[in-house]
Amino acid sequence: MVDIMFVCTGNICRSAMADCILKDKIQKNGYLDRVRVCSSGVSAYTGDIPTDEAISVMEDEYNLDLTTHRATNIEDSNVTHMDLILAMTVRHKFFLISMYPQLKDKIFTLREYVGASENDMNIDDPYGYGKNVYSDCAKQINDCIDELLVKLEKEGRI
Picture 1 (cartoon, one colour):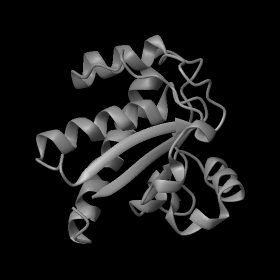
Picture 2 (tube, rainbow, N blue to C red; picture 1 turned 120 degrees about the vertical axis):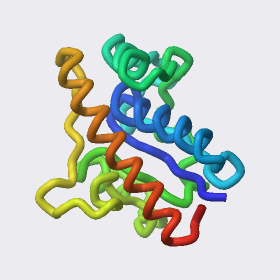
Picture 3 (cartoon, one colour; picture 1 turned 180 degrees about the vertical axis):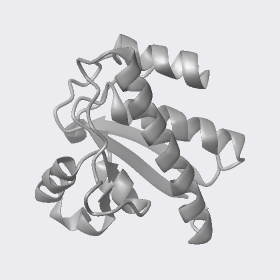
Picture 4 (cartoon, rainbow, N blue to C red; picture 1 turned 90 degrees about the vertical axis):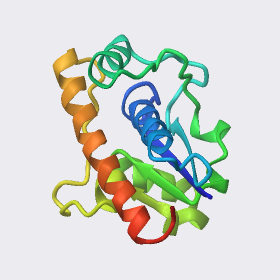
């Protein structure tokens, strides 16, 4: 079993969408018994709801329901039990390493883990922007998750 956590700032946009997308893909690919997914935010208010734009993009473009997601602050999470922690930005990555130095070998940016260039490690925050920015963000996340699944399969982790 591989335990994966996505991390962003508030856990109401990027990491919430990543969590939702990966859960859908592991169900569709028959990996439910091999992968567990969760998400959190380094500055999240535990219990907060996703943004309207994130909910709308997940529903309209991916046919996924994000309405039941509730944010979790990293300090309220089970981060220390994760096998893989995928942050949305380099800043999140280094913040996590400073908080949990014992986990440094498990912490990457999502883009870094799937092989993006060093100049392209971040997935920018769509918070405060319109639905088109959320749509672009979700597409980046979706593409990375497709690559993530391929990598995990090649490594024999799933």
